[in-house]
Image 1 (cartoon, rainbow, N blue to C red):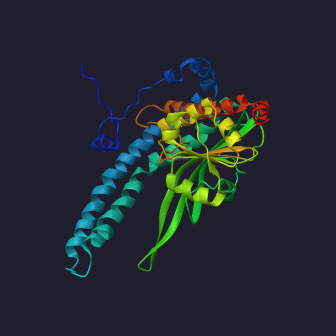
Image 2 (image 1 turned 45 degrees about the vertical axis):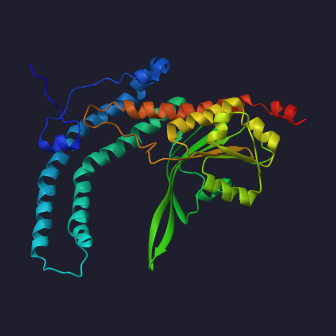
Image 3 (image 1 turned 90 degrees about the vertical axis):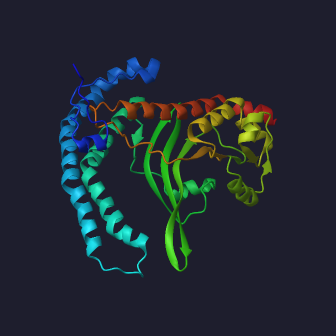
Length: 351
């Protein structure tokens, strides 16, 4: 007996593949030893939310299919018809004509047709993500209302030059008595070309701001972006810090106003953790130890806290939860290293 082939993507949905209505159970194999404890929490607090939104999944998929069938093809035909009726205009750029007649209408039509799925994704993430995050503690918050302003993060001087920026999703919590915040940024710079101004995105990614056990006497900067670090070095007039780990030296450049403190902060464990982050997020990571904070800036186009579940299958919210665990655990491991570097350890080295 041949198994039914269900729609697993938008194209198959439009072509009329049947919608998968089979029930599924979240297994959380990727959480390894943490899975048994979390399954109990999931069944009590998150699974009821998934079941509630599962009732809206099938209608959203059906509505999306109908919209594409009834709107996308007629929109395309209307664009072609208008194109045929237009008189030949040699002064009009061919690319401008294609953009106005085809790209813009079809772009808005596509997002209108897919809007039922987009809305369901957003509402599901807003409902389930904060509850899943609360598993780590009652003081773990998703998009806390009172967040630091963008100007607060500028004190670390790690951002590229920009004119205006946006703070997007964030999470915050307390681990081992130390407060942390993970904030998404989008920074733009205005540029002028032949009298025309436009905005250019110069940074998208996240910043991890972690409270440290004790204030620092100086500033320590870790970067892989040689252009940015040169500008920072010129402003701060800090000396290059040489470390014994050759792999870390090949990847990062370290500058500090206090050589002894910089070497103490960049312990073997901390260097290994920063190198590990480059294997996950790429080699453009920057970090700054200043006052009593560690700030890590990670450029990435990845959506970190959007809670994207696969709506072509029964809603379990398993994949967003696994992603959330991986991101939170990375931060916990950084804090564990900071806690191990006790104040007395540095005082002995500095004596």
